[in-house]
Image (cartoon, rainbow, N blue to C red; front, top):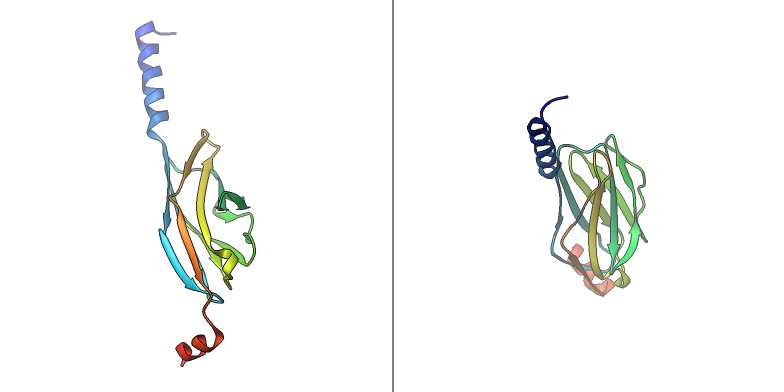
Length: 146
């Protein structure tokens, strides 16, 4: 079967390879201010080496789960995320949440979280995106559109 030193060396290499894979989640923007009735776009970039086979993602608002889709072979399992929220996946690494139209109750702290299950369980969380929705008025919106 090989010497104990050889087995130990292979074990150390295996552990080093396991530690080399890393999952990172970056989210943007950090702060977003929009007018009520407009659209807000939040982006979550997920990177991992080596590449994943199945990715579990989650968007939360103020700690409450909005949606928990899977991405398998480049396909998103769910296209809806909370009230007026639409998800899209742009390969190789961007999960996009669009809120349209936004209302005052969309204001809050949004966080993107991701986990891989194969080849091993890894989890990572993005930084917070703070969304602030201004009430605005129909009148000012009409003036800006002209």
